[in-house]
Amino acid sequence: MNLPVPAIVLGGYIMGLTTIRALAKRNVPVILLYHSPEDYAASSKYLTRSIKIPHPEKEEKEFLQILFELGSELKDAVIIPCDDEYLTAIARNKEALEKYFKVACNNYDVISKLIDKKYIYRITQSGNIPTPRTITTDNSEEAVRFANEIGFPCLIKPSKSHLYVKVFGKKMTMVFDINALQIELNNAVSAGLDVLIQEYIPGKDNTNYSYWGYRVGGSFYGEATAQKIRNDPPETGSPRLQVTKNIPELIPLSRKILNAINYEGYANIEFKKDHRTNEFKFLEINPRINRCMLQAIKGGIDYPWIIYDHLTSGNLPGETKCKEGIYWIDFAKDIVRSLQYRKTEKYSLSEYIKPYLKPHVFAVLSLSDPKPFLKRSSGFIKEISKKI
Image 1 (cartoon, rainbow, N blue to C red):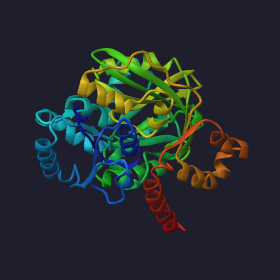
Image 2 (image 1 turned 180 degrees about the horizontal axis):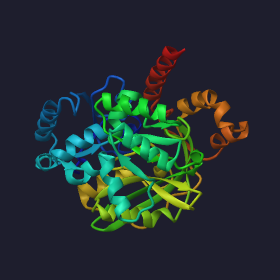
Image 3 (image 1 turned 60 degrees about the horizontal axis):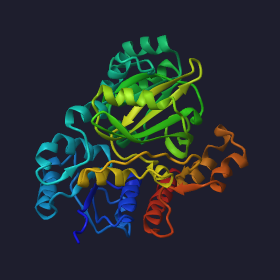
């Protein structure tokens, strides 16, 4: 009997850990390549091997050399990038890597338009996809003119999110006046980052929604949707709690976007409902495994397996439907942030507790694989203690 070919997961944290656990539970050998000593996925018991490597952006040549060396050992293994900094390097060198591996990412001409958000916003706006009004500028006067036109508060968003997060520790910045706009724009420009000025769509965290799907040759498989409940930080951050929910309006919008860029494979698309116009407005695409995928797996759509099975065997899933009402909970963050933001979020105690009493999955916490949660919690406690 032939053993399954290995999966090589690039980058751990929540996205990589979800992929590792899902594939290992289907008896796929999983190898993790990671560059940060803080990457708690490296401590998962489900790994066959973990390899600490050079930074894929800062030391791309050395990173690729390790991959090519693995290629001679692990012919036809499946490479699954789980972080933008890996994704860019893999897409740029996809043709060379495909001599050794099955590569789960789009070609660089597609990925470059998604990693750098200014390009995808141009595409959605020209394709009549509802999108917040947006400009790209490093000019303070132009930024002020546009902000006055769209009104405050507005958002300063990075063209490349993962670079902005590394510098400022957040996905974006909401500004409420001209002075704050100029300060934040200057900070980003001084850090060498391209930024967008974008209209803020008013609404609580639960007006944010997600689409998941797998596109091959113009056909779509395993489509599902979800609603965010609580973000970190509120309004502008990543989800710390989300629930699967059928939102049929997102399907044609998402298909139109993915068709417009001839996207192939797995994608996650984020929207926010603008109650002023009753439209779902496009926010961003994650062209890789995303944070909350575990709830879809629990709901019946196993995206890591769909990716692996398609690339290794050519198989595609039949009709699938994700069970509604499954909560994804980033346990450590939700507990801490619920205390931190209790005065601004103003949820009742029952609203905080309800998801824990309903069908749910935890982002990192697993009784069968506890080490990643313990390592992450230790780092989280250290981070908080520095701020006290």
